[in-house]
Image (cartoon, rainbow, N blue to C red):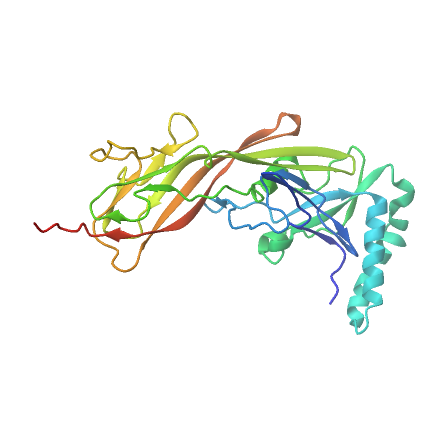
Length: 330
């Protein structure tokens, strides 16, 4: 069944590598017009894994839908392509053809005249956009208004028309975090009752940012969302263990770029500032040490806008082998 051409979709595709960053943007293909929001920075692109994305704290989530402007020409091409594809598809249901025909008539020959092409310099069409990965969620159904015309200088009559803050929230969803694997000492296998030192250094433990921008329909706005690591939570993978500190929450060091402290010769009798002590052997298996980083999220946007967004987390499991200390017989 053909979709009524009233909704555009935001896609993750179209990215290209830029060293440690990626650039992605919406595209037009056939009858579908994807979001025209463009993302640059440490963001997920084509072929990248999304497994290192932020998990928002609490129940908050980035928007599943919003509204973006389109020129009269873009909108007319979109509707005509959707109409042509629907009516010319063999075996297409009659009600689908009727529905898309009524939709086309509304903007071409009825409520509006020829997609307002003769008024193209006086305003823009605004269309609903849904995150392609979330389009079935209830939150994505909020943007249910059919495409509507807005004169230059007027504000769109909807709550979630694209703004710098919405761009910041969309960028939140695109942040690609660095790997979270922590350094351990001992690293190969630790011993029962022996403190294991845990740390993250500045080489991998650093802030990342994504900029979302939109330059279409007389609207030129952007926002940069920055994720800064602030703490590391250790969960040993067994109740028979102790963490350092006892809360398991290792905060960022005063240098602002590292957590914990690398083990060095001469520290065998010291208590690590960040670490774990296992109280029993893992036997023939391993314990899953979970290391979860909490990231503080802020944003800055066009016109001096900015603020805070909910903290995000990301964690990995690491297999830790714990052996008994072998007694020496003399």
